Image 1 (cartoon, helix red, strand yellow):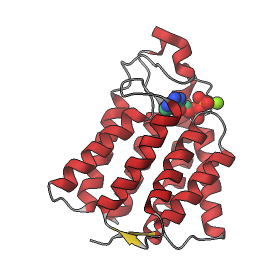
Image 2: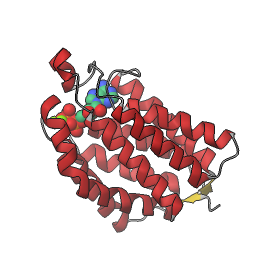
Image 3: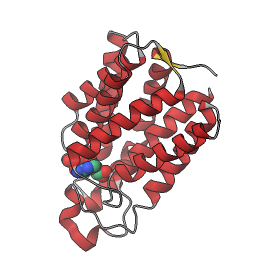
Length: 211
Ligand code: ADP
Ligand code: MG
Ligand code: MG
């Protein structure tokens, strides 16, 4: 299977930006009962800006692509999700360093470093009804599939399925971080927008690996 290189992550970014355009209204709808109805517009703005930034000065390494996307998200997306997603991708990219092409297990290690950064910055733990409730199960599924000898495409598909399940499993949870936590019990019964966008980003990774 082809290793993950800068071209792979540029294809991922193109797909992710298209998905955020297509799903923006759904993400914003999810953010309206338990937030301020901007998650879709935030993600669309950030990923379109990131795609433009990468097109203008294409980084030559996979780490470079992730760092530039993360930096662009931090500068163009306000609120909670900009710094959190920015940290995720910047950390992952820095972890990959100058490597030109990496196997899926190396990408997984980078993503784990990024997710650790999200947890450290936001202080959320599993079950708090945040993006971590999609990201952590995805990492576990990715690790399990790769350790079992699965190929990158199948392992990323397993990660995407786990992320989607994790996002859906936020519905009965009470939010303990972010704006939704201000609602207390009234946050129960709604799917978390950030967990939903995380699942979309991982699905875009799986789609890229399948192409
Ligand atoms: P804001 O809430 O500032 O308007 P967004 O609507 O773009 O930002 O993003 C909201 C999402 O951010 C939530 O659905 C949740 O998944 C995520 N989030 C908020 N706070 C945290 C946190 N402390 N840790 C992890 N994720 C968080
Ligand atoms: Mg919001
Ligand atoms: Mg906001």
